[in-house]
Length: 401
Image (cartoon, rainbow, N blue to C red; front, side, top):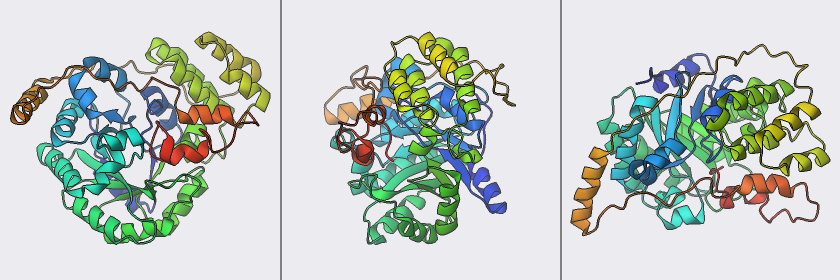
């Protein structure tokens, strides 16, 4: 079991220092161990895993190996799950418990596929179910272990329903909650409703994390100043600039160098797709349009990307004070799925069905809308509302910002 970090104490410590926790959001494909290691060197206080499908995690060893990796220095860490029933959320939480400092329930994803299956934002229509899932996990976990939830606004104008829901979830004993400052149908071109976040914060006693439209440290500090929230979560902003929370306005070259070093040391532990996408995001401000297009269309060999980066950025001339030579090895995680299978069998017997092995969920099945949108920006003939950043809020397969 990894050494634990008490996340509740992190919030208390930040409050005593009149500041906020700086948090890297859960992003499918991108909040992997290697990226978490990078952002931790630039002021990130707390990192989330990618959103993990709880049923897949419970049923499939292959899914567990693909979706969750960690090492001894990967803390504080929250594993975020998408679940639509208590058995899956509780079982997945128990299985990952030895390796994380908390678990989080995703109730913010506005994807049509997720909502059709009762995941993400669809759960906002059934706060009693959310409360049951959170309360059950809270009762079955040590009090020092964090249990949290990420939600969206239920209305952009009247916050009574959202506040009532947040109070209902607070009553389950959760450690903190994250609120994205838009409703599920609103896209990223709609500014975050900061007044709503402020109103919600004033209505609950537990720590609240604010999420949405955080692209610089100044954005985070303004959000904190206006809402008095306890934490700030960044997604798109930290993907484009992993050094965001350290005050850099755009990605410094040293950050690209660190990412290159991490990827070389990780070797086969990181996929070409993940490695390449991160380079594309973080070099957007460092490369010309022509070079960005060339980078995005390189043949799928890691060495080609490494050589391209070294050829077009002054990587070797940059002095980096942070040594990543001793990048920790991954932990060998083991999971006992017997309790889950027993619960699922009992539930299946009640419903007259059985639990199928394996899972169809494949987070690597496509490039994802965010990467495609970055490529589309390089093509003047592509309309902004087709796979563009404007669709990130309602059409992305990556995360619910």
